Image 1 (cartoon, one colour):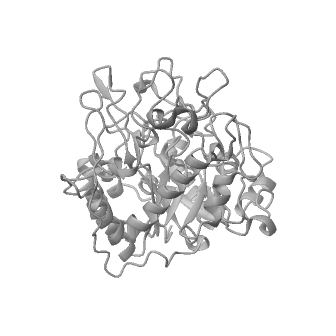
Image 2 (cartoon, helix red, strand yellow):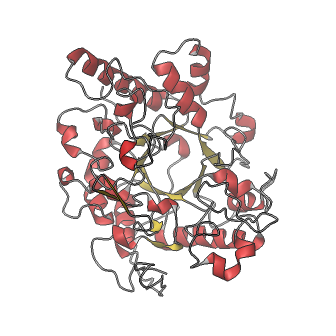
Length: 448
């Protein structure tokens, strides 16, 4: 399936696409072991949208492909793409202080699980949707870089009872969504609805979808957004042996594919260290992020905790039950501050998002502005910030587990204190590549 037009004007349409891409000698099953992986998380549009990126095709799969030499020089061997399934970035368009805000992170509100987002293509691909993305994946593989997709199976863009109806609500609302006894939508996703992932029909759809991306696009791994939802029963209660998670762990087609869980959800279920794994699932280690942020900025009485995080969090991941590669270690990701902002702001500054009172986004950032909130010309503060950023990168790379870096952190990219830029298709979210000439925090080879 592929292609979509403005839903408000025409409704969504599907079409059959050709499947004759020449992969040449690409071998998708020659995967890099988790212990050797260095993940680089990025947003396809934001990565090259700014003029400073120097690419010809800004904000597209092709623009990212143009940056492969940079990725090789940096030293990463896996890119984790923020959601690229078809979405409607204009669904909540609004004006705030004359700035047009769109659903820039719209992939977190998926419209079609089987189609890449057409707005990420540099040219029309009528009946050949996916060609540009496949070319990108092939060239990344040819350069020794794996591709991990951030996938969202916890909810869809259909919202709650006040939302649109264009897909699963029409197929079978009672099967595809978790409903309360009075017919309303459970909202463990924070986005209006929750997919009923462990119903046999929904489970099979998710399995078929992931197999499709592995077979047709040769994807190397998946990071599951709000993955704790995937372990809930149809009434919302957590399952000890979730059928979907077990099926994914033992599926033959997905046997060499990396499975990474964001082991919590918006309904309060937090499973870092206890996510059902069958020695197949790794986790975003949110405890690593929180504990190490506090330790690295100098909070007291954290030496023992930091030692545990650096040595692979054995208090969370017993190697006898989880294997030795369960922890994805990170200090920053798309949610929250960039590394530069982590040491430049004490509080979030999300006023541009238009929620009033700076109310959206997380408040528990564990950040430190080094004495001045935001930008400064003070050379002592700038030097301190740079030293803290280098410390953070060095500790992350030296910690046992799989390190994950946020794109732009290597050259101190800033979002000006905005820790939730989901609606900012502008300089707040676009990487400023001119900073690469001014400051280089690290290469992943880490000549620091």
